Length: 363
Image (tube, rainbow, N blue to C red; front, side, top):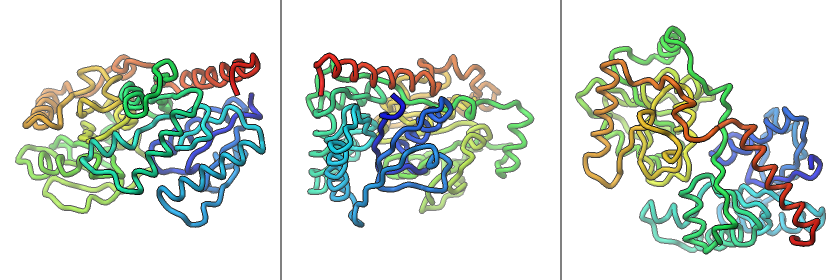
């Protein structure tokens, strides 16, 4: 299996959630002595993971957006035929997928953001349709995604498996009170205010505007800190931490993570935060809210007036009486987030497809 394990994605690099997912899988495979093939159009050659894979780079000729994805799909399908890859595990949209990973759906995003489909969106949706309907198996990272794959694209329920994404539990774990205090001082976070974290590289989708309204101008003893892209706005209770590579320490130092996402297929930030002992205020429809139990999760409804403020008030009350921290992070989750459990399940699907092919029941 090792020599034939093939992943495709836009890149092997630090970027969005699906890129982080691929890096996590590569790390876990390397620990097992497995060297997969990764097909992508962008590689960060400075990463240690680059040396742990057989990299197949597809030149996308400087194209961007939907046109780049269509060219990548065409070239990937050609390479797959030439090299006999099976099953191909596709993390980005392609008709070459045998196992199609669903970390989001384009129609779901457009609907949540209130946007009409333009020509580029229609191209993306067409490719995404072939990604899901042409695959032998769809791995959905949440029930929300499973429902959207079936609802938007008519994929049969028996072809979809929900497999929640993994988290490095050795990295994301709590520390004691003294270490938390030291981290808080290092980041310059005040001790006399409840600090709320937004980790975001896409502020419109993540609801930064809602959080600035609720926290940035509040008269309560609160501070909103943003890790990721520049906020592009100012408020008395707003501070920027910039892009961070030490997110585990940021989670540990703050008092509460908050996600006001208008569309969130899963949201690893929520699980990572809880594993570090920090609770989550989260929009109830997000994928990660399926697996985070109360009181580690404080849910609210983005379309219900006053709901976000009520959740913030709950967190503030618990901060004041010292009961806000998550005392048993693993018990707060409804699934085992460890990478090995996820990888074993994914490799089990690979083995099943190969067995079906050998019996003459598959490609």
